[in-house]
Image (cartoon, rainbow, N blue to C red; front, side):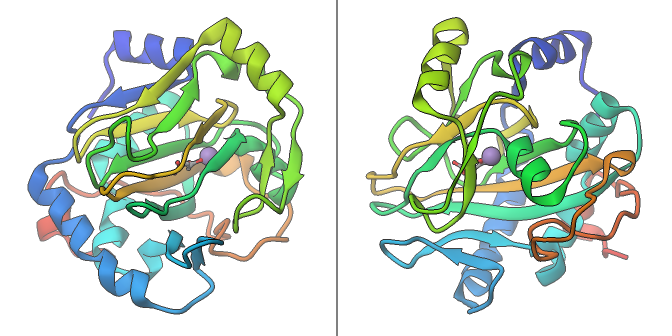
Length: 261
Ligand code: SIN
Ligand code: MN
């Protein structure tokens, strides 16, 4: 699947792209059906909310589940990423960010490169974050909020927040967020299950609590050019994988028919 010229231009201008219903209802149901067993596991790859103890982020899913092993090589995700980056990529991180009904907690204002650089020594902000909505995401269940165009000002100043949530994050301060949003405005990424997002490594984003009765689970695959690989192995492998093998796309129907090699 290739992005057209208008989509590419919008990605470079806004710093993100929303692709409504990129995956079918049946495909999303298959992805979703894997989660109860994965979330039930007690393992370091499952990060839990400070407050409720519910799973906040479940990582390394392609190593733990066959459907996710195929999803990370899906052409509808990989081909647009390769088109934007123009070179081989490796799988940097694979997860589902779950925001449970009534209890899902915030993601502070941040951009991903601050962590990729600060923790893993990634040289340049070239990684792409590819999301697939596993539930409907609406204004009530804690959608991701982007600051449009903030990637053009980046990388802005950050500091490490180890207190606010159970997941340590390099975050952007309120003064900087205020400046950035005055320039670019907020966009909340909403849509039906199967909607996909592509956003870059210096785009500022965050999300608020889920006080609705509806879960908000989002699959996230981060790919990074092999030429821009991590230089520090400080975090565990499940937070930044060490296997730099270039990812090769499977067939378009791989979720149902393919067997991951
Ligand atoms: C992210 O920063 O990619 C996660 C934010 C969220 O799941 O709301
Ligand atoms: Mn992020």
